[in-house]
Image 1 (cartoon, rainbow, N blue to C red):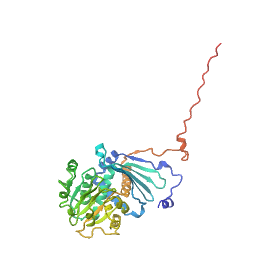
Image 2: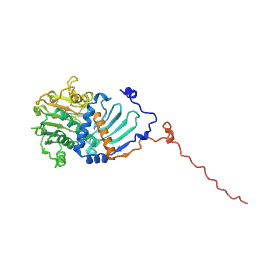
Image 3: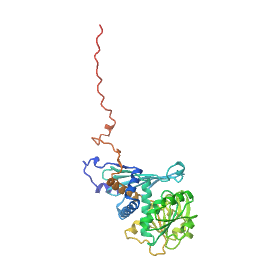
Image 4: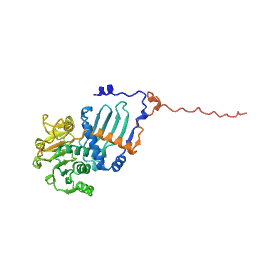
Length: 372
């Protein structure tokens, strides 16, 4: 598809680079955007933007993310493009970062113009990743969960948990959340942050207790292990599982029997088979890409008693949607700063001019009186 980009996209050679300024958005800028627009509005608009881009699935040049794994975490690059714009995200996952005073997940991203390669936006994506992940979860649940779902179990109460809880409240209609984390301090933090939200919040002593009576179960744990957070004996007919935390090789949350008991939906199958809970299953285990359900090409939930699983590992298309959303909103609200990322050249072919020494004035000669 890269060849097609050059063949189908043209821009006059004289288009000035100054017409494509690079905007920089810091975490403070994105937080200001959310406060100005309101979190429910941002989540809803992000879900709509992501859903619309999923409906354009064939338009995108897609690839699984490129990952560098270590014993303590992973660092990934997530690229994607259509014929107009290119985006990538740099993101890490280091479960023990709290010991160093750092978030488990840190990210930034770039949105660029395909026709010139000029970067349009450089933005933080740490906060934005939590927003877009929650928006994607809720978008999938509106398609896959029972319409009468009102109670969600939230297993893993770390940095992304508030966004998941509020996205499901405002976009799906949940009214109760049942919480569990192996770290009671994380649950206490989440309870404090959800105070006044209108949600009925219950802290539970175990995953098994939390999922009792739940219509939706969201798992968003951080440990980089083949864990069994949810087992088949915890399932109930009609349950929807939003599995968010299993997102790299060697890291899972669901027992294999959970997948066998469910209809399983994924973002980008080649990536999820390597990174999601799906990595436990044989290569021919049947799954459906979510875009096909959204486009009416495949069925989602077929009966109220179906158990559905959204094996969500996060895909670059969601970051593309989020970066485009940030770019438009920041321009409308006047947020961000210009970033001098690309050299300004009078002659674009004379890059050396940046290093050429400035002209030095000739020294002034002072007349010296003759000695007699």
